[in-house]
Image (cartoon, rainbow, N blue to C red):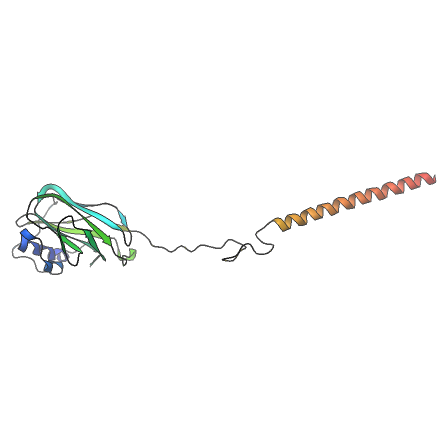
Length: 216
């Protein structure tokens, strides 16, 4: 995914091994003299506290492995760019690159390190999935490149609520729409009128029959 050249700047940390990677290693593409990356499966990994992030969120990255290591330099990338934000917890190590990078503070063997990065407001899903990338110094010139699994960026979709049918935004049901009270009243009135008409007709017929019978 990332070209090897994009990682070479980390190699400058070997020049100042005991006190961490130099500030110049943040952007330099010049490798240290005679030093190259190790090939094969690295004995170290980067794990993260979450598989999905959003702008303003904090995420923890942990470097660990099957062997102790003496040095490291870690940053967060998204495509070919470094992720907007900064480390809020360097795990007792040294900040670099305006707090977008962290490196070791001494050459003591370490079994693991843990750092926390806060994503900035400019994080965008369309820029791709970010990763942590690190150089790990096993000893002297034994340097490994490792990356974390890709971290998904949550969608920041603005959801616009839709008005209820028969209404307009900010109002209730339109007159004689969306409600059933008016229709029910009309139905009741129609039923009452029909009953009254039937009763009246029956009374009229009864009166005519009685009158006819009396005249006989």
